[in-house]
Amino acid sequence: MEEIRCTSLDGYRLAGGVPIHESLRQEVHEADAFIGLISYHSLQSTYVAFELGARWGANKNLIPLLAPGFKIHDLKAPLTELNTLSCENAAHLQQLVRELADKLQVKLNASDRYQQKIDETLALPRISKMIIPEYLLKELEIDFSTRKDRIPGSQREILDYIENETRRRESIPQRDFEIKFGHKVKSVYWRLESLCYLGFISKEVTDHRDEKPTYNYRLTKEYKASIGL
Image 1: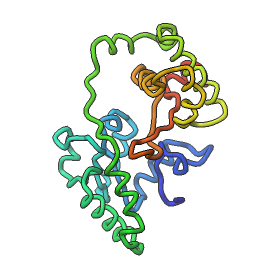
Image 2: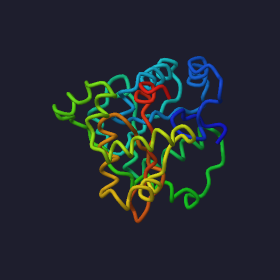
Image 3: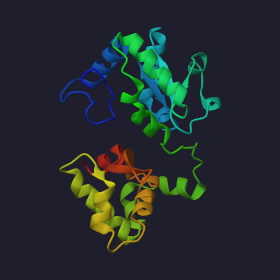
Image 4: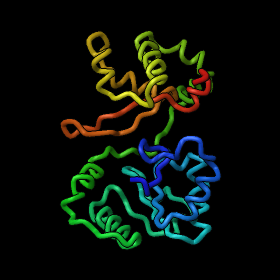
């Protein structure tokens, strides 16, 4: 774990207090293997674009891995020059593990040791390229304070809860919302989804329950900055 860097994933982030730009620049250049997880969301990140570009420009190992739902025809140059692997294809994921073991010169475990992780990856929901409706685009142009005043009381209560919890933990499991609000609010999940669409919060898959993904939720960086957190 200590040899893996993924700045958006707990347990693999940069150490506290290190200079971000300098550390990323060094690690992007020096890593023995580099996996670019390509999704419609990641391609909107300036950091991701710079990291991929720096690695490609250094002419070093770079494996583009397409997230579930990403269509290869949406890939742009120079990544189109590289052979891609897909999270939707079991053979591709097996190939990824095999090639990484070879590149890093580590012993490849028997496939039954990691098959469950491959199965979980294959079960992830396919996220298609989002077409944002005109009414939502207009809503997103409004400042966060006004945007919050316009949401229903139940959603505002959930958002207040997330803000308070953010002061003591990075993210909140889906189950915590079900326990706190399930007895008085119907469809807690869809209220959380609306807050995601409106830019207040983001979510990440953390587990699967009854073959369905479960999520953790956190405030977006933009909203945190707007309220001084």
